[in-house]
Length: 249
Image (cartoon, rainbow, N blue to C red):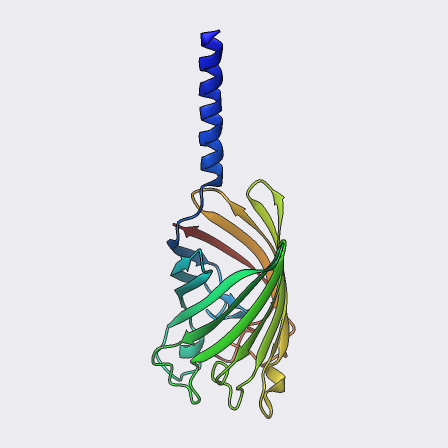
């Protein structure tokens, strides 16, 4: 009988400890880092690296009780130097915002994001600041980003906007189906030719050590609106397969 009581006590203790471990709250403050290599750096469907590989990395801080977060991210690029307007070969993103719940199962994310291109040489500058707001339910999100400055060097393009919808759907252990569609509107006289719609269909697999993704990305950007340098300039918004390997730690 004593053995049964002891066994029951051990089992109860184990169950309690297991439940505690499962329900252990996140720490108030968390810092994480990320790094990735990709076959092409696509932003809103347009290649930033002339359809060639890119390296990227960043750091994030989150205060879990408040939902406040801030971070930075960098990537190699080629479009600034291709425009013969400067020596910048790096994009630096700085952002901060707040996440939380609107109602049960419905979340929000609002913040500000600055894209910085050191020594970019463009007039107006390629440096851009946007505010954004996002709502999410389950695997789906709807987001709008609004430019407080000129948009990536386009003249008189302040108040340009980008509306997009995304869904990351679990399809297997550690695997997700990634769906995305967005529309970039570029404000300003004569800038309508730079407005376009982009889309992505892909899959991501978490292997534990790293995550890998494979996606078909494309746009309906007008021919000649987003092109690389040279007489055989390539359409930087054309549909293509993009492969990436990333790690968060």
